Length: 127
Ligand SMILES: [Zn+2]
Image (cartoon, rainbow, N blue to C red; front, side, top):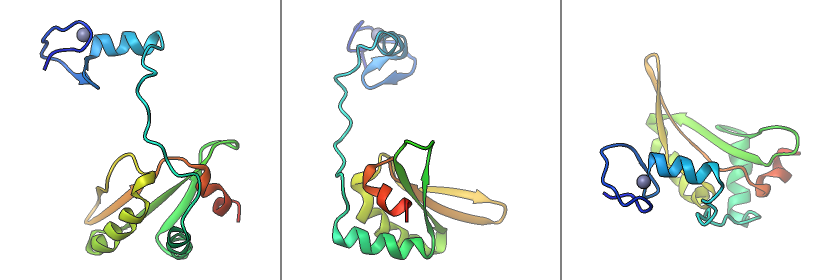
């Protein structure tokens, strides 16, 4: 693939269509503001609320980076329950940037997903 900016074909890393040099340059001078993050809902649906309160009693947790940040939802389960995690993920995927990840800890494997930080979770974090 050719870089969108310098139009050169280089065998190095590409980010969002730019070679890494151009990408770093554009980032540095703040010229990449045309990359819109997908818009997240600002509140939860009734169904999401219900699932969230269930998760809070089990495999989910809300965490916050810093005092003034927004909360994010993290759900982790054993891989044998991955189908259940898939369900939860589908319910919250509009808040997620990446998909389900598998982690191996010793002889156990876990799968998890994290949402982006969102004001929609703050109310529940504060309970
Ligand atoms: Zn380039």
